[in-house]
Length: 115
Length: 112
Image (cartoon, rainbow over all chains, first blue to last red; front, top):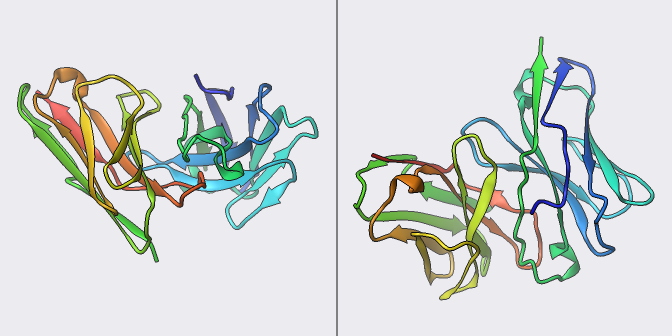
C-alpha cells in the first residue's frame, strides 16, 4: 500500500510554476518524503527529498507542512520537457530503517505542461 | 561517475520460453540493487532487492527469480514465461542506507 495520496492529473502552462501536492497523513517521525518523476518509457528520475525543512535544488523545491502530513513539489518554471508522471514516496531508508532503500510507488500525478 | 546498464531495451518472447535480463552498475561498490516491474497503465512494483552478493529478497510471489552473482551484477530470470509477465522491467541501484535510487532505461518485455 502506498502511503501517499496524489491527484491523478494536473495541467500547467509552459513558463508557469507547477505545484504538485501530496498527502502523507500517516508519515512517521523518521520517514522522509521523496519525489521522483517518470518521463514516458524511461526509468524514474530522482528529483528531491526532505524530512521536515523545505528543500531546494536545481530541479525543484519541496515544501513540507509543519505537521509533515502533506507536501508540495514546485517546479518554478515548467517546460514541455517536464511533462511526466510525478511520484511522491515516503521512506525511512535515510534514517537507517529496514526498508533497504525500497521504494513504494503509487499511481502518481500525470503532469502535462502545455504551450 | 556511476552508471547503470540494462539490456536488452526491448524483448519479445513466446509463452513458455526462458528469460534472462541483466543489469550492471559501474562506479560504485556494494550497492543495493532492485528489480521493478511496471505493467501497462500501472505504477511500478518492486519485485526483488539485494543488499549484497547472493542475498536476494522477493517482494511478491511470482514466476520470476533474481540472482546477484557479482557485487554489481543483478539478473532477472524465468524458466517459463507467462503472458502476465509482460511489462516494463527496471533495474535500479542505491547507496546502502539511502533511498536516492538510480534507474536504468528499462526493458520492455512482451510475451506472446
